Structures are given as structure tokens and as C-alpha cells.
Amino acid sequence: MQEKKDPRGNDKIFVVGHKNPDTDSICSAIAYAEFKQMDGINAVAARAGEINPETKFVLEHFDAEEPVLLESAAGKKIILVDHNEKSQAVDGIDKAEIMEIIDHHRIGDIETPSPIFFHAEPVGSSATIIADFFEKAGKKLSKKTAGLLLSALLSDTVILKSATTTDKDKEVAKRLASIVNEDIESFGMEIKKAKSSIAGKSARDIIKQDFKIYDLSKKIAVCQIEIVDDEEVKKMREELLEEMEKVRKEEQCALIAMMVTNIIREGTELLVAGDESIVEEAFGKVVNHSIYLPGVMSRKKQVIPKLEKILNK
Image (cartoon, rainbow, N blue to C red; front, side, top):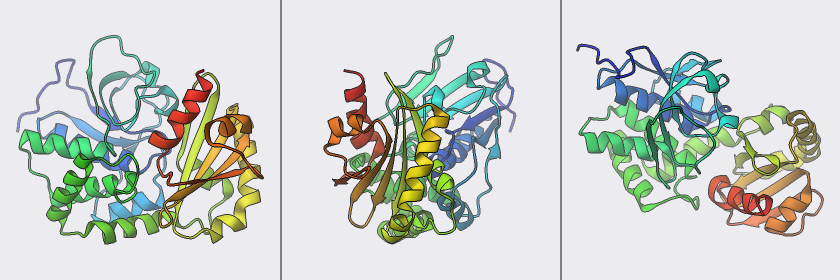
């Protein structure tokens, strides 16, 4: 097939997710690069950081290669997936040519000098959007790519239990599961078990594995871990709080909050370092640097909007 020239040149285009990549960020980059390649575009899946244990499990399960590590976007053509905020983007994004953005988060602060294709939907994962692109374009999904997209969708929606889950997510998950012949609930638990163990990890690694900075009226960070058993976290609680305070000072944040989300109990303990008054105004009394939030599982829909409302008063 003859390579199709992009209207702004036919250089290599890197499809990349956010720093501290999660499964949706990695798998969406792989799938969307494949989608563009089907149109003859020279698209390459990339990543902006190290791959976490959950994503490694998924890639190995479907015999998929890791995307290339992109240390700087400067001077390169870029498609962003699963984010659209500078603080979460690969280094050098200000000196890159952003071609497209595919996302399911709030609209952030990335600016472009000319119009681009920007597609954002209020759904549970970027994978949902990309799977829908394949369907609408009549492009056949391979079993491997369908598996990656299903994994990303189930990861980001916490097996369709998160408040971010929509009917569209459920429909797409059902369609993808039929392609790969996987049961949604049991396969989702396999994925989450691969992510939930923190045994052998340092406090800093745990904090940084799903760490996002938000530049609001005050700079804050919210990280999240998902667990099926509280005991490992209880043993490390003081160590985690101490390291959170160190990271807070390094990143010059007013607040760092860690969501410890129990996917079995469907609730979150929020550990807090820094200005606890922000969390108290949003959620209630913080006791011993902690508050339990029953039914809260989504950073994007249930935590960030409340913190943003307080900070942007």
C-alpha cells in the first residue's frame, strides 16, 4: 500500500499518552496508531514513561509489543491520547506539532497555533472512543487490538463500576469481549489483580505509578492505587504519608491526595499531604491525614471536579 502523505507532511507521527502511563494511555496509543496506519499514515505508538504491572500483564496476555519510549516531543509530530493538559504531557510538548487529540477528560490547557482534529467524549475510557472509531469506519479489529482496547476500557472504568461508566462503554465492552471471547467480569478481575499488589514496591513507586498534576488556582496532585485487600496499604500507611509530603515539596504542590480505591468494597480512602482544608471543604473532616469516601472510585468524575470547585471559587 502506498503511504498516504499527511497534509502537513509525511513525517513519522507519534501517538502518545500521558506521563505515568496507565493501561488506557498505552493501549489507546497502540490501537490509534494502528487505526491511522490503516489509512497509510506513518503513525508510531509511543509512551511517555514506564509501563505499570497491570499494563505489562495486558500486553503479555495479548502478545503485544510495548510502544517506544518518547523522552521528548520537541520537533516531532504528535497525536495525544488520553490527556490534554501540559502538566501531564511528554516533555517538549510546547515545541512539538500537535496533529490530533483524542481524550475523555476535561478540556485542559494545551494550545495549538492552527486548528486540529480534537475529539473528546464524556465516556469511561479513551479506548471506548477509539473502538468506536474502528466500528464507524468499518475497519476490522484484530483479536489483539480488540483485547487491548477491552483491557483499557475495563481498567479505566474499574470493570464498569466507576461513576464514569456510560451505556456506550458497556456496549463497546460487550462487543470487544465477544471478539476476544473473554468474560467481562472475570477478565476484568484478572487485570485488576495484576495492578492491585503493592508488595515489594517503594512508597515513591506506589505514589508515582498513577500520579497526575493539576494546575488550578493552586497546584495539586492526585494519585490513585486500586486494591482488593487493605492490609498491604495499612502496613505502609505512615511511609506513604511521609513520602507524599516529600513529593509534595519537590513538585511544589499545595496538596497531594492519594486515592486508595478498594474495587471490592467500591470505596476510596483518601490519604492527604499538605493543605487538608481543601479536602475538608470538598469532602468533610480529615482525621489523621485520611478520609473515607464510600462509593467513590473515579478521580476524574468524583474527586477532581470537587477539588477544582473549591480551588476556583
